[in-house]
Amino acid sequence: MNDDLRALIRTIPDFPKPGIQFRDITTLLLDPAGVAACVERMVAATERPVDLVAGIEARGFLFAAALAVPLRAGVLLIRKDGKLPGATIAEDYALEYGSDRIAIHADACAPGARVLLVDDLIATGGTARAAVRLLRKAGAEVRQAQFVVDLPDLGGAERLRADDIAVSALVAFEGH
Image 1 (tube, helix red, strand yellow):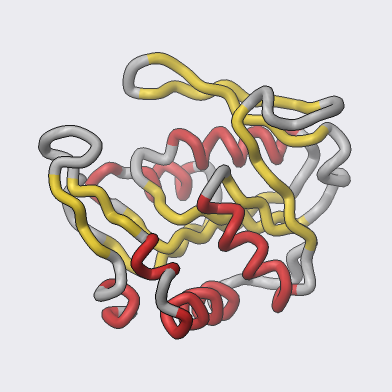
Image 2 (cartoon, one colour; image 1 turned 90 degrees about the vertical axis):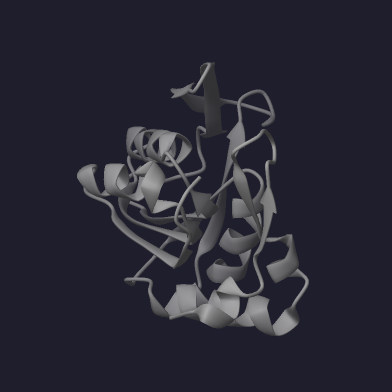
């Protein structure tokens, strides 16, 4: 399933370091029919209604905006800490070597808002899980997340499911 989209995603070996197989969606984004199919299939997989589509910086912004239009929803940007003006709320999360922090505007999400979380890829799930915690801290109802690519060997989708999130991805690639 979705072999047409899989064929549009190139793999770059040993990037950013040896042993990593980087799944590059820029080649998918260059193909108008591929982008359209991607958006249509993600919209079809969305449980409605949705008030906001939350995109994780930066490629998640592209898909959040594209999905929001047919879903008749707003777009909520989840940014790296320090990138948003005004009052924000933030969430820390662990990285392989260290930690990071993501933020949203304090007034971006009304309590009870039904939010779809979107990003281009799910790997270990650290950023996506932090995004879910952040959105829930803001009072959002987050029950679903969508990705273009899943790397199931890294377990991120399963970790999100353990957080009571319905996860879907258009394509999965084995390995890292």
